[in-house]
Length: 85
Image (cartoon, rainbow, N blue to C red; front, side, top):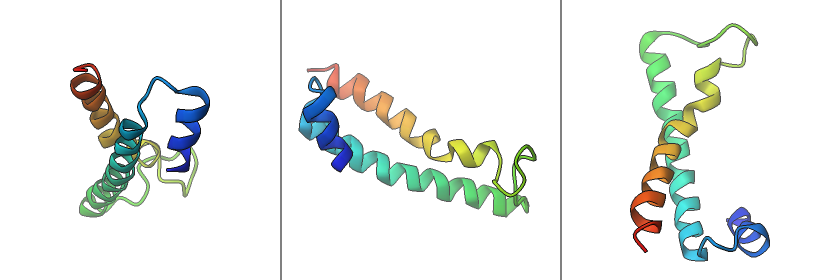
């Protein structure tokens, strides 16, 4: 939430504060859901790490798991809510 206020008042003044708060809450929730779904997928297949480049760090899926849901939701919000105004 602090990031929303800093962004709104410092460098992203075109984004209304209410929309920034909605995106922050939505992004926080969906980021955690992406992480949980990715972990569920790895546990269901019995895979601990989805990559071998940096051992013990999970791999590429662990780097982008939160982005899978949040990027789609942010795009949909920007397209259908912000552009509709």
